[in-house]
Image 1: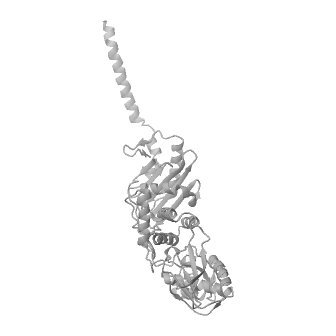
Image 2: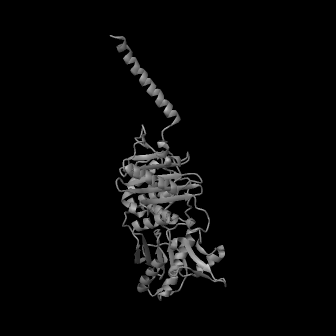
Length: 430
């Protein structure tokens, strides 16, 4: 072998080493574009107190952070309440209210927690009852299907509609919408709802301001409102009213003269509850669920028990904590993974949620808490489940949801080359 042949391989090694050195120098002075940062804006909005998760319709998690941590869900808990209620009653179930006559000529009203017993409905009922009787002695209210004075955790004694009480007999969400004229006269701002003396007294006694207000936190007073409205409407339809309104119970000897079967099926009740985020409606159906499963009187404890039975049997979850059905309480806790299981089951009813810009969603808010859960519609992937829990002040939910939409679109288009796979859950890090 010649000297020239011995030098040749050494030169190749030197050239390779020089190339590596040059690459390191270039990397030091000209680092690559921060692709990872560009591809992780959603995670950057999630702090240690927050959580988020996005998954395909099949439940495969695409992106997540802190998704196993228990958070306060606020009103996104209503999706779980809706799911448990729809599973038990079925989407076509209708609430019923019974009307009976006793031997003394008293009209008895038996409530079962209908959350949509509104003025228009009572007008309809009064017309039908007027065809069946010419006079009524007393109106007797039977509200024993629910326990008396159910205290909802997180509900305060304010006049805000979201603090309205629940009960077996309620009208107009236990609220009144009114204004005052310059001369002090109080009048209803809803043409279908008369301003009866009972409400005028409540407004003046409580010193309520104009607007829609909760007028009581007592389920008995709420039932008296039903009786007062119906009495007024029966008189308008020619029925002679002789006596007073008081409480009692239906007995086997009483004659059923009419059963009002709600105009609104359970599916519509749930849709209205989700769209308005009504705490009153959520806990009405929550307690009604408990009463149906375990017998009256309905209580929050029975609602919790019935919902937990559904969670264990159908969702297989173990760590959710619920104390009521609306999300008012900060004692409610669940994780983003728990919400994923809920959303997967809720998919047949997803169109009951609010919809905007290809996102079906339920929001939640308490002081210092913002949450949102639902589905991001993707033409390629289908409805992708998502949950975002901000358990702190100053979070920007709109920005987060926009970011998630972009992330889902990129994932659907296959632009996920820089996403790292989580070693334990097969979860891409985004």
